[in-house]
Length: 176
Length: 176
Image (cartoon, rainbow over all chains, first blue to last red; front, side, top):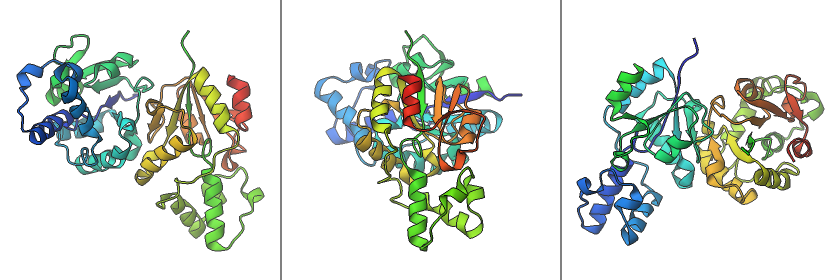
């Protein structure tokens, strides 16, 4: 029987990028971001003007992708998912060319069971031909031709167009 | 009208990787490879034993992907193709993690008109959902779900299963 093919996004699905952006912003600017206030807001609504420029610059710094935290439960459940289905990591890493090696290394460190053949660093995800895409970004899910699943992140909590994975336990319930 | 989507492989379609491998092998070993003798043979048939081990190691050297020559006519015809259709670069770069940045830089230098959103570094190409794939490797073309087009390279000249692009002028005739 043909296995189900599942594309899994990296930032904010496996790696806690948004959390680290907020952490860096707070520590560099001596400010506290009110997470309740930015819940459900896109980057460009949550941050404006100079603040937005600073936040957008953070992932462009050399070491940003090196030591991101792993999203809760993703390692164990990805391992099961990977054994049971045909799973690919699909990251829009091409926006940050210097991050390509760091992202590959990060995956090797935290998800060592993932074969290099199953990793895709791309830009536009519209040509990814898997059955499912698990992603936090609406613009990736909207152009995807398979079944889109939105993975919860602060910036997408008000989105209602897609079936929602609140966390990795939801992914486990759906596929395992 | 929806544009035709075309995935274009990088090594031996845009960048002359095989040519450089032979060049390096010859210069490092003081030998001349008989190109007529290896015509139509896969790497693993063209080279055996210790020779194969050496040849396979060459792309794993740090600077290999930095300064590959551009395949004849690819720049001008890719520029036209890119304007007319929905074109993606799809390279199995994940096998050589240290090459990721070098490959991105090489594309920027020789194909500066290609947006980062249109570049994909992957492993297995079976999940690439474009209408066409232009590639020199039979194993990529075999698992591709759209229309496969084989791009001529020394190692694939005897292959008859796919429509053949002998060179970039054939690509021009087909799509422009």
